Length: 256
Image (cartoon, rainbow, N blue to C red; front, side, top):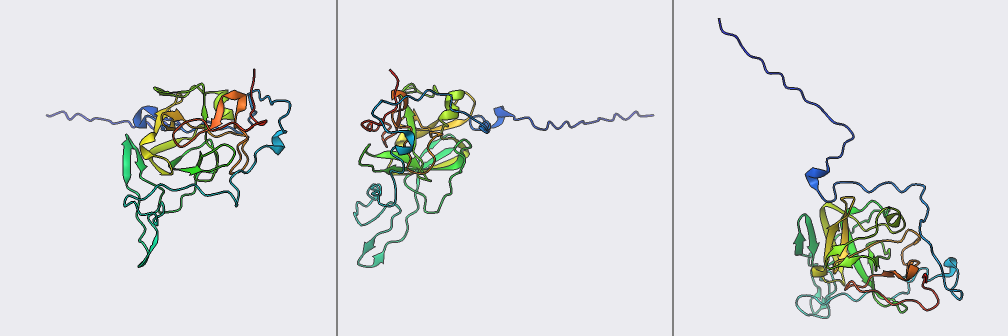
């Protein structure tokens, strides 16, 4: 008489556990920032105006639009999406191509040919990120996200190697611009070769420009606000090449 062996397979489901080792960078969701306070000391020069009278909306309806880079054909009549006027009327829309790939993030040659709605929550990040170069008479050309929100760089960070030194309470006041896997970045007025990302200490992924990690400022209430310009002498709106933009006389926030 033959004896049959039975194998029992037990499947265990682990609920509520994030396996960060599977997707690596970007697999964790940013922590909630409900009921937050600003854990930074903001000091203003005696002759500076109060925050409510700061730069405010510097990209209002009358602000000049950022100049788009020339098209591949060199035609001055073509705009950033490939649309232009000529003898035959408007040229067909040219879709951006992938200019650079960094692991699971594709960085395109120009702005998207489709409307993109950025995440309204600065702390959450997105799978698709827009970066736009914006002109301003006071500070020069700086970079915003697709919703017109100002992006900053931090002097305590490094770009070679690229590293963020703003974590914990610092990242509460200065939320990093996060991108999730699989990601796409569409720039306008920024060299796509200068764009990338780094993995942060919490295993999220932060967008970089020329190696400099970029951030929002929690006190910027609306698109165009640059209330973080010059905070503590270390935070400045980032330019398209990753450099610091100019300080605003009488407005920069700084410490001795």
